[in-house]
Image 1: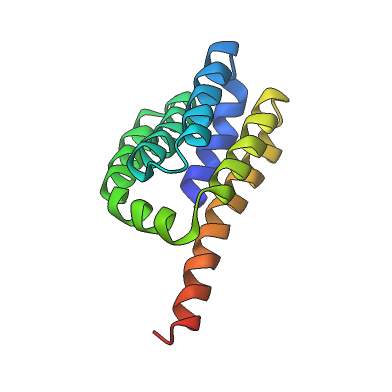
Image 2: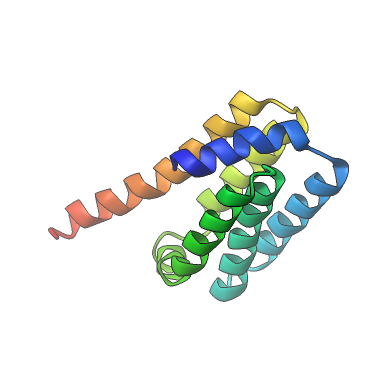
Length: 130
């Protein structure tokens, strides 16, 4: 959460039209893949990898890529459990903040995105009595 939010903050200072177009393409794939969990998750992971790459911090990019790939299975389960709406919603907010080149807003949107996922998982765990 903290690392990826910081990557988003740093990416905001390196925004280009090309970067925005690539992020929007991944978002569009997500929107079109609501019934295809694997394709949705692949686009979701790509979205986050692209932001990490745009941070222009190779160490951060390398470590986040490893984390994102290792968490692919859990992301697939999360998508099957909670659906797609939140991911699409937060990615739209992140793109908007990047378009505005508002680093603080981009960081905040990414943090909220990731925290929302954590909160939903924790609530589900409480509800299931685990």
